[in-house]
Length: 180
Image (tube, rainbow, N blue to C red; front, side, top):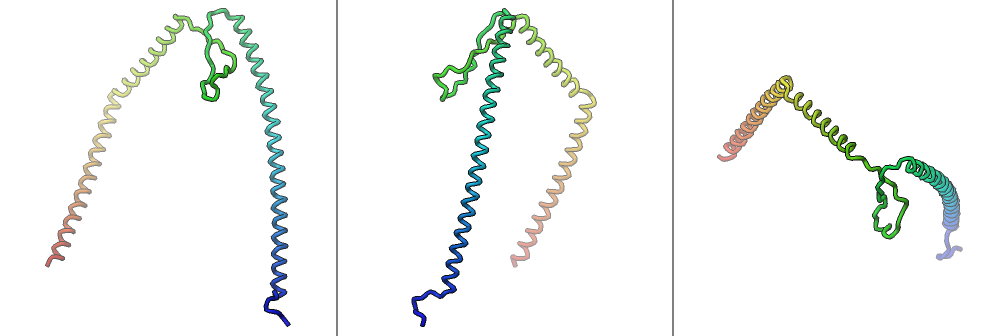
């Protein structure tokens, strides 16, 4: 005595089984998401701790550098110009960041000596390069390579011309055979 609307028992069991499998899969997924979240939070906490340690280390280095600069400035009484080390970024407009670092002024004779030395070195390097490029050996090597390249290009042009002539003749023969 089965009704037309009754669900077969095997279908009901299959649906219940599918629901149980889906529930187990959802629980496993939730557990893996919780584990991943806790691992991410642990990594973020470790990164924040490392960043704090690096900030402290940087502050110590900056303090030590400032002390060294103060000692060097007291020791060296030459004229000093002030360098503007601010970065002009739109987001930093209006904020005066950091101390200004004094830049050393190079005396005129030292500056002239540096400029002349660099000019002499560059001129000597250019002269050596020209002497080497214009030597007889280099000219002969260039001449030999040029002859070789000319011969190669001639051979290539002849081969291309022969191939073009063959193609043209083949087309001529094909039009003659098709015409009658």
